[in-house]
Image (tube, rainbow, N blue to C red; front, top):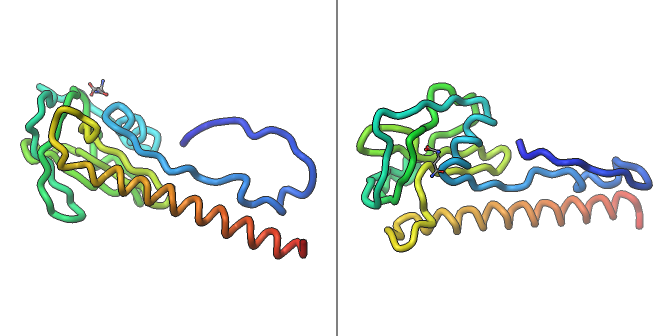
Length: 154
Ligand SMILES: NC(=O)CC[C@H](N)C(=O)O
């Protein structure tokens, strides 16, 4: 997943469990493909790809159909994704993977472009979903900090 370097510091590392946390990630298009690969999945080159602003996708969680802007030639192979990774959207023209989620690490991604503008706004809700993931992370970090402070007796 996201890589980085955590530097040196004073004191007992067990007193700061909140210092290491997973950060919510929202991947779009290439970001979706790279997340799919990072989670253990494979990608493949499509025969024609999807290009244009009128591609129907189905949200498998809500069963709603959204019109989407798309511009890609590769896609994630759903059957190669490991346990715990959920396919959240499919392209209704060819059944290809149009979105995935890994809730355990607060990861979400879309193959298409919800940010497209001008373009359809059917998928604006996905940005609100990502804001909720970030809020959850902030609340969890605060709770961990509070419990670490009370455990230390400070
Ligand atoms: N718009 C993109 O990010 C394209 C991703 C990748 N190069 C593809 O063609 O599928």
